[in-house]
Image (cartoon, rainbow, N blue to C red; front, side):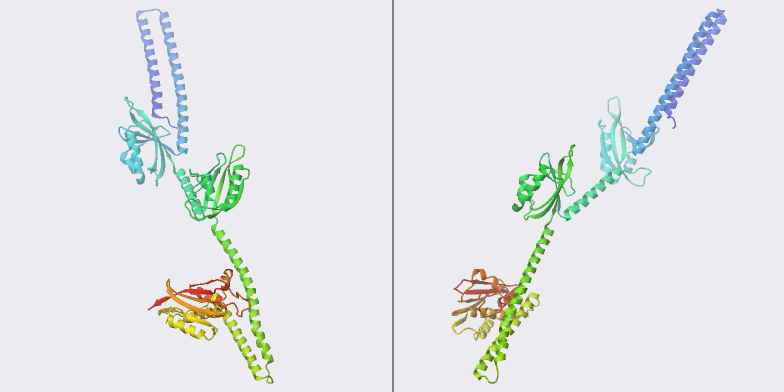
Amino acid sequence: MMKSSSQRTGLHLLYIINVAIITFILAIDGYFHYIGLHKGENSLFSLVLSIIIATIFIIMISLFFFSYKRISRNIKELHTIQKKFEFITTASDIIIMQYDVVYRRFTHWNPSSTEPHKSFNIKEYWAYIFPEDLPIAHQLVDFMDSRNDNPCTCEYRYLSPSANQYSWQYNDVFPFEHDADGRVTSYISVCRHNNKWHEVENKIMQFRQNISFITLSNGIMFVRYNVNNDTLYHLDNSGELTENIITFDTYWNSVHPEDLPKAKELINLMREHKMESFQTEYRYKNPDQDDYNWLVVNIAAYEFDSYHRISSYMCLCRNNNTWRQAMDEMIELRNRAESANKMKNAFLANISHEIRTPLNAVVGFSSLINDEMPERERNKFKLIIDQNNKMLLQIVDDVLALSKIESGDIDFIPTTFDIYNFIQSVTDSMRVVIRPNIELVCESQEHFNVSFDSRRLTEIISTLLVNANKFTHNGNIKISYNYQERGLYVSITDTGIGIALKDQQRIFERFEKVNNFVSGTGLGLAICKGIIEQAHGKIGVKSELGKGSTFWFWIPCKKEK
């Protein structure tokens, strides 16, 4: 390693001083010899003088070599320190900058020689700063120009003269030199490249963003429980601790009342801090929410004290609504499947019974008819066979109609017709099946056109009238209609036996009958309900035992003048 100029100057100066002193001593010695010989003085004086001069000469030579050795050792130590300093600055990627307040110049110092490496002015300094970070650099220069006698720190992106891209640079700035009045005249800045720290910070930020994305997309919430102070903390989406404390009053009020035992069990386990992990599930409602959400809560020991006792837990709370909904749907589908299986068995049993009864009559009476029996009795048997054939045909038609409805294969062909004329036509055609002692009355007299499938409407009204006639022994059957809520409302009221409240809903199901001894398959109302629901309408009944019934339905349709 090369000696610095100041070190070389010190050695040269010491050498010159010693040579000058020795020369001066030799000159004195020669002078006194010359005087002594000239004056004829005795040789004793000259001898003593020579001894004194020689002694001084030896002492000066010894001092010279001693000083030289000491200075050399100091220089060697200085070289060692410089070498260490250079290693530290190089290994740590540190550069030393000095700012002269008076001349407003920056100096880059060479750590190996402690001499200036490069000097540049303010304008050149601005050119090295990343444009977006110029305000930070301006603040630093303003701070130093104000001669503030305090240290400061700052960070910006800096383009070194030999570099191709900007690097993050962290600067520790300290007052270095002062004038006679104590004002700062220069600052020393220890500049450290900080790219690796920013790379780590960016990776951590990216990691936090990934965690936040996962938690938000999966409905995950982090909660931390501190055993020592018995406190719950709501963490942010990346799992960082916040000052958001969840009080236990808020916690208990947010848990669904039915699930409070599960939540209390969880808190008690963490307070005992013996189990390292645990899982539970309950319904929880955040203060800003209206509905409860199912949460799966997993807890795990997070921190331990010096005795390896649990000091905190991390709670991962995951929204489980989707899974719960899927499970509920599966349970509902299972129940529907079981119900469908029961309905299938009931359907087969009922249809078998309903078909077998008229079929037995047809087969039985057909086998009894012969040419030898009286014509009157033969006609009676033929009538019975004809009635049972019609019953079989009706059963088959009803089953086919119900199958189409349940499969969604039902069509509507809307036509426009006058509702008054339509109702009159239906009632006129039904009078032949209405009992003679029952009066069929249409109470409504309003004329207006509606757009709907007249076939389906005829089927619905006819079925309801047949049912009313079946359970009404005397009195009347009244039909009325009106247009309301953008749809046609029709009601059929009878003075029949009525229907118990507990039976008013089930009669709309397949093969359900109030009186099993009354003829019929129990499919008529189910077909009516299916047609009306396919048309997005509604059907219902109001009834009281012994006081008659009112069946009503509403179907959306257009009213035209």
